[in-house]
Image (tube, rainbow, N blue to C red; front, side, top):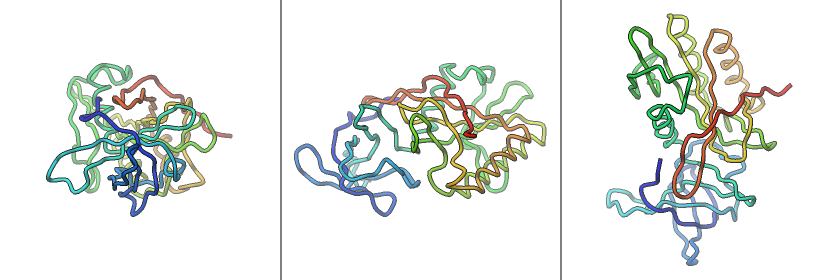
Length: 235
């Protein structure tokens, strides 16, 4: 997934009201950027961090910059735009990069299911359906481990219970963690941050919901699905 407009570097001043960020461009100008991430962004929103913005000249948009990446001091990148996760996975499905889902030729997005919910992707082949839910994982507290979630997510727990129900109805269901941290080599659930989500995750696995996790190649040019990242529960 290439960015629509070349990104420009800046320094983060502060993130506030969840969806706003004050940043300083390399010219010294301070601007407000849209922050497309509803989570806590723990470890990704400290003052002085190097960030990458996507400019736009759309007259319908109030803010002329969108925050897309964080560049860590060691050169690793994190993708902070949770809204792009589905696009990245959709490209991975289309190019056959997700081997265990390669048998499905029909891919639909945002399909209604469960209780007033929409599943990210409904994959099908013949009479077989696969419900695929995507989650963007960026939290790193103990490198190289990435965790999900970075804040309490009642919606995420609800999705897990609905995936489990699809399995009970005879369908395949998959929870897909998209690891948007280039330095991460393993993933786990952040049980201390959201115990309710962790319990829903355990119930879903016991019911037969599968877990897949893949990393990304991230640069100011774009983000592309890369290789599987092993799910490694901590003891």
